[in-house]
Image 1 (cartoon, one colour):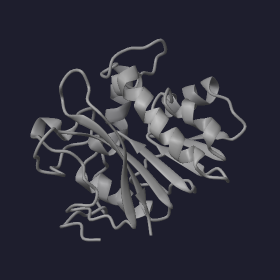
Image 2: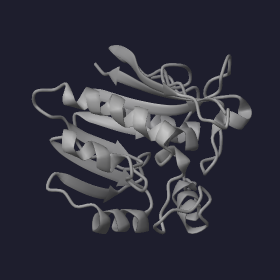
Image 3: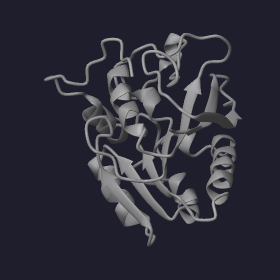
Image 4: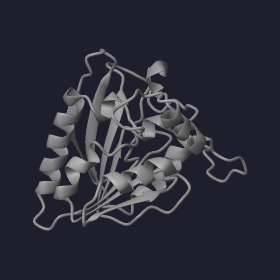
Length: 224
């Protein structure tokens, strides 16, 4: 895969962990009933309901349930609704206190949580990986590192917040709470500089937030 000079070997630490800890410490995505709130994208019914319906339909289509790895699981409001449809479900996030909270709050025989930096550490094994509005917060360098690891899964369910109309994909940003929307950009893994190779792609759902800022698109990729 061509990374157009994207090097994942750097002596400088990536700021993502501290940036995401700050998001929850300062409640930059808003406040909920607990100390951890992953924003309206994880709670507003107009976004959550169609997403859960689409992903549930996919997961339920298998006679033998899949092992699911949820990268960037956040406060787990959405993941908790998908657990019953998986053979095993692993929620992953970079914020230690958030993972500790999830372990205490959500209990299920097939459910596990891990605190990992998905760009720099080895991912849990599974059949299907979920990345729901996660990559949009990461730099291109980090996304490239994640993409390298996705080939080990059979299915990738990717959700990204994209601008309406024409836009320039994959404009780089500094990792943090923001996204590429301010640059009229969004993450498109099949395009440069990531050029992810897939066997098939299928759109699972599209929602249009009432604030009029773009569209939230969920795509299923079948990997080689």
